[in-house]
Length: 207
Image (cartoon, rainbow, N blue to C red):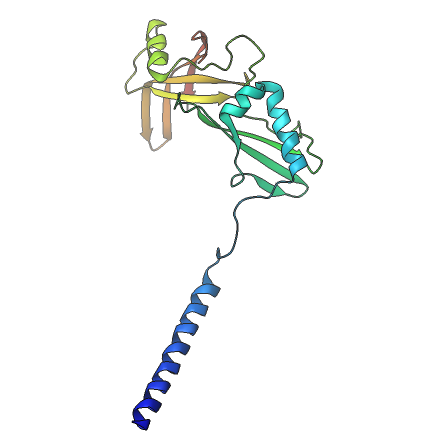
């Protein structure tokens, strides 16, 4: 009986030690254990960043559709690369990112890219985005965009030159891929997603 008890205790100690060693090994080799991927943005910087966006969108639009993304936001001292989500549940094609950089005082760095913030005060209905993909395609057809050799590429995207969201529709007329690389050409149409007016029709080419 004593022998069995002694044997049991030895086996229990050995098993416990092995389990502890195994657990410690996995804990140490897990590079992401205990880490928080979210950036901790000071409240005063966040408040100033929010206010910067609101100066273009207004308080109501911001409250309804814009939220900070602390996982995509980066802190590269002395700057915070702020990222927000712009999402309109009733218009699923509007699901974009807002990005800009601020310093440790919350001041926007204007010589770096500022993207994705619609200017709701520029004109009436600027941020309505009532033209969906189906309507954008219809507008393109009505305004003479040719079919091309394959299906159109249709995107709701930020246009940095015009500082606004647009429907960008790309038609391809020719496409060749060979020993000299990829070559293609076609035509693009840019459509205002709020008013539905055609902003531009341009040829495009990749040599």
